[in-house]
Every structure is written in C-alpha cells, then in structure tokens.
Image (cartoon, rainbow, N blue to C red; front, side):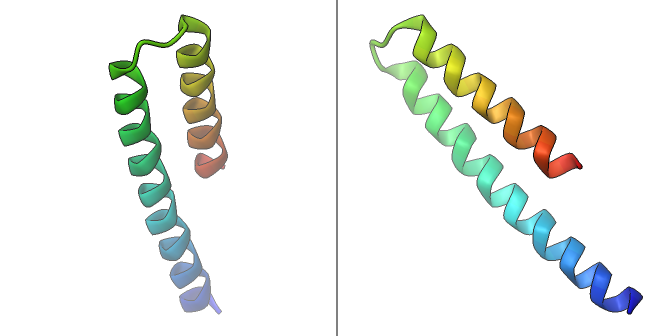
Length: 56
C-alpha cells in the first residue's frame, strides 16, 4: 500500500513539474508581448494558485 502511495505521489509530482514548466514558459511568452499589465498579473496569480494546489 505504501508503495502504491509513493508511486501516485511521484506521478503527481511529475505532472506538477510539467504543468509548472509549461506555465512558466507561457508566462515568459506573455511577458514578451505588448499586453496590459492586468493580464500579466492574472497569469502570475494563476501560476501561484497552481503552485499552491500542487503543494497541498
């Protein structure tokens, strides 16, 4: 049972790293665009929310 939990935790961690990496690359692309500061702020809030969710 503990082994199964460890495998699930590792899968979630890998997924979290992929999601976080993708969000980071998207934020980098957004920062390059001529966009309103509000949109960039919302994108950063999204990244923070995703990080918080993955930590829990």
